[in-house]
Image 1: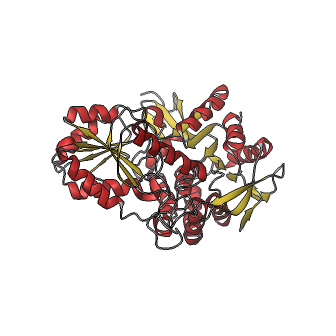
Image 2: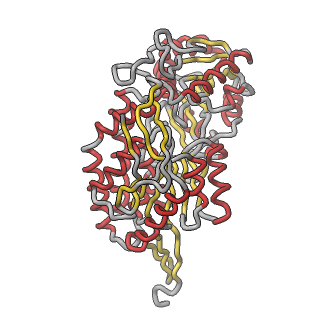
Length: 476
């Protein structure tokens, strides 16, 4: 039973202003596995004040000072990767192989990436007799999700600290343990007091207070489109910068010349990983009608290798994160069936023998049309929708007919064709032939998938203000 009742503010672990707790539910057992304190606006005030005070000094720190801290964080993080993985499995259900092999280590990799960028990043640039200065924006409020908890925390915190900003973090109240361990890592690394602060709590309370706070210069959220809209509304009166990485309903266009077995295998795996709880997952597969039977047969075979089970053991798939999420996924599968979609495999209810825990059957729905709810809404579960097309132009049109624009996928044996189709998809992150994640290129979306970018040097830009100084150099 984990119990984390103090917040990390100004370099100290302190009790909340108002004693109230949130139970954390283990989604594999449906039992309470810990508690965290629920913060209030008063706690946000204290954290922001600490960050504001620390910014006066941290903004003037040298590149070498910040590199030293980031390297110490990497060292402290590496010592806690095992603990982090165990916490992620417990709080959100990621199976051990995924939590230990990907979820936890990716946090370290974000800091390593930030170190590489910081070593060479140009914070000043001359144009004629003027100089352009890139300066840290100030106090940053971060609201992070439960699906890839430490990945999303580090994607924001690493570049923010690297450029000289200070931070107040609110992790998801559904998966708060990883954020708590992260604060312990930063403390162990010797992060100066107030440079990083942690306040646990609910989005409508702590998240809203962060978004609206007049001394927060920038707010960044990763979450649902609905939550992103609420953050933007709360931030509007203070005109602070708002960065949003939100939902997705990513098209995956399979061309007629694709090598079907690897193309469909990789695509289905990308949906089923993390129990389908990934915003960039290729959840709308667009396949030629002439190949539909073959595509469905391969997809069925691959999906059925994703056996759900105890995430602390050898199971390939864990549960979804909560009862509310389980009910949402079941409701959308039902809507798809009612609208005429065919269940290729999976379907409603829990897998046999898994009556306890929020487990979902890996599900393939075929015969889906783009007007169905399952094709329009982000399901956020292990559910793949397969849509048919007759011409490539039709596939591109269907692929772009969505409110989202986070990611897109193309499968083709001809790389030139794949590149051409990738150019036509209106989304911010395109994967050709199931290419994997790249932390060195910008990640973010078009349309209702948000604005701004994460990863690499593009993430640095999110946390910098531009200052033009005219007359810096004497005129010739």
